[in-house]
Amino acid sequence: MLQTFMTMQFILCTIATNVLIYRLQHIPLIGKKIKNSWYKNRTLKSILGVYAIIRKIVLQFVRKGIYLFTMLMVPIFLIEDIVNGGREFTDQQWLACMLYIFTLLNLFYGAFMRPSVANADEEDFILLRQMHVDAKMYYLINMLVKIIGESIVFLVLLPFVGFIDHPMNFLFTAQMVILLAMMRFIGEAVTLLVFSHTNNIWFNTYKKIYGLLVLSILPVTYISCGLLKGTPNIIDYIGSPITFIIAVAVGIGSIFYTIKYKGYKKLAAYNVKYSSLEELAVNQEELEDMDIGIGENEIKKEDIHTNKYDHLKGYEYLHAIFFDRHKRLVRKKWKYKMIVIGAVSLLAAAVLLYLGQTPEVEELVDRSEHIMPILLFLAYCMCSGEKICKALFYHCDVSLLKYGYYHEPKTILSNFKIRLRYLVKLDLQPMLLLCAGISLNIAIAGQPRKIIGLVPMFLTLLIATAFLDIYQLFLYYVFQPYLETYKTKSMGYTICSSAMYLICYSCLQLKVVSIWFTIAVAVITGIWMMISFALIYKLAPRRFKLK
Image (cartoon, helix red, strand yellow):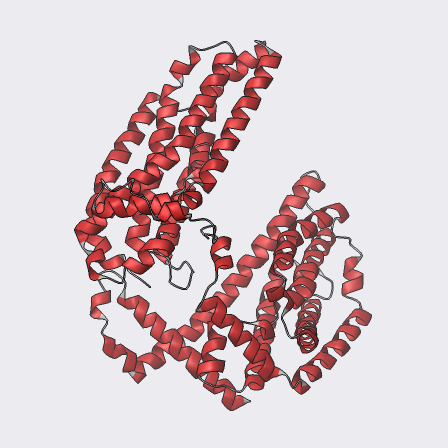
């Protein structure tokens, strides 16, 4: 087993260092200084390998620390606020809530929903199919590394989130970690037992049920914790010697079962086949999960054989045909936005007609300009840029990027302008309908003159929508974050997208929008458009490519 473990770690470390060198080569300025000879430099790769291992360990602690803070501590702070009237929990109540959530999410849900033997990822494909690592050794080693590594991380971190408040202090934390490890082994054994009788991994076969459980487990856990206030008695139940002895006994039995299990080759064949389908031949269902899938009947015969765009030439013709053939895909969310905005506007109008011109309605109209910050954030949420860019990549660019002429600066800039025009036109329509709906309701409220005062707000909303579309399309061309394997992977893209979200979210703090704010937004949008054209022409030919 030790020899297999060392072999596996060597292969994974080699892959990690190669990926690291590849990423370093693509960093602006310093990337050119990193030569391809680094790939065969054993001394350098040994150093990078040590770095990769240390990085993996540190990230494990960071991820679990973030998990404990966001999934356990933050919900308990909120439960304190809502259920306990803002008063802080006692140490006993805090520990009870923490243990309650930890038990449901980790001892039960985490143990049975994603065991290591059910993995179907790229590592499985490489090590089992291409490197022919022994299936039994591979799964047993993965199981041990995952469970032991997770146990060590939790043993270090749990005292910092309140487990140290138990009278037994460190011994209680160690007891919980051992319980966690035993439950993990039980989960692995149950998965193997079910697979031996059904020949499938249930959450791969029943994806919708699994997805429903994933969506429901958190609200059910937090709501029940709030209602029960963590159930202080849970400390006695989970921490009792009887619970510990039973879990250890069943866990040890599970360990023996996993060691004696004889169906690992069959399991490997299933997982490798599944990972091949997932990673190498992604089907229509996955595209639909990304919300850019097209059904067999989505494109009709008349969409293919049409001459209504014969007056166009070049890339104008290409995009006219693309958006026409994919109009159901492109306009799917657009229709939903238009219907919702129209329905809400008409419903509000009906309510105002029913209420009449009361003082309350007049006060509401007087405060209408204060909704601008909310509308700006709403414009960000309704922006179609990311979805359209993703559709353009998987249904158009993924094929054309294989040709050199598609990387030429003039071609890229021309396509950028054409797509920007389509995108802005698509997103402005719901915003115009929203402005019309607000104006209609103000007119019905008996203050049509107020509409003139809201013109800056309407202009700001429309200009901000155009700015967001320019920004999203710019990120697509500069970072091109989509992989051919239907994944999104780009640190720069993620950082820039998150930054824009934070900026739009911070707009909620604005009190009111004046004509000067509108002018500032218009000027920034105009300057950004010119800058984006220049940067696209300069950067995109090297960065807009297949990954």
